[in-house]
Length: 337
Image 1 (tube, rainbow, N blue to C red):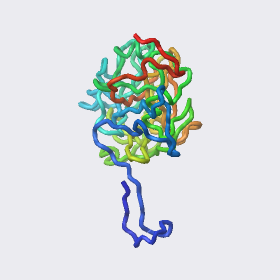
Image 2 (cartoon, rainbow, N blue to C red):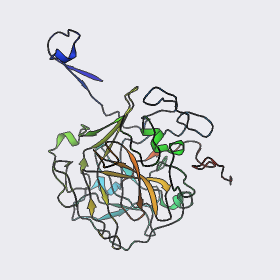
Image 3 (cartoon, one colour):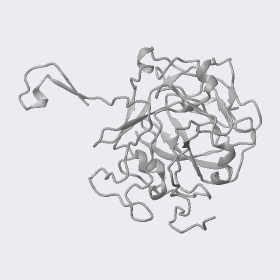
Image 4 (tube, rainbow, N blue to C red):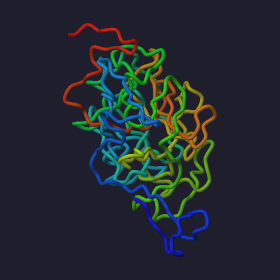
């Protein structure tokens, strides 16, 4: 949508015309949808043939417009001193009410079950860390937290380890990035960073999450509650103008054995989102968003994190057929069950 603000008559020279042209990215309703669609070209209008059968963006998925949380965090918002976590169980997560809301932090998988950790302030992990080391296909029937009809997005194999990742087999890259990248190379040619007017963030004064490490001034609203919301990153399709917003709600770093006892790190500065693709027995790949991001600038890039870190989850719609099964990141076939 282009918004034209009143000014003088357009003389064809926008540089001298006080008429202002603003491109607005609008919230697009409650339903999941594509950002980049199967068959969409890259930045230069070139076809992207990255499927194992020569298809273009065959793994593009419909993303939920909301982060994952616990229903109790919505029904009765918890303060920093309230519930540290909620047990949600297999496929027991719920979606936030607004795209800017942080949702909850989740561990990739651990033996205490599926817990949603309060995103507000200093909420330490209440138990020792016992992470699960099996591949995601093996454990997803116990540890998937997305609700029925949804699952975590993949960034490579889900049935084995991914020492490196390729966009050819990444739902995250094919779905969100105009020009999918390899490895940890950032992509920022169809994304912007900042505030997002979704009816929640824009109706409250921005504050600072003081009960955390490495915070950003005026980056959060509704601070101190399990429904708090952040500035963040918007990925968009420059042709269709479809978009999805991801809040930068930081992570809960480590646990009793990890040095920070689950304290909140980098809220308002970065966002860390789990995928279903393991990197090693104790680490998994995730989507990392930042405004500048060192070697990962202004766009999404992959980072791997230990399983006991608390990160955000953005679910995708489960496809009718799971095309990742049977093909690994190197392009070789996997035995079918």
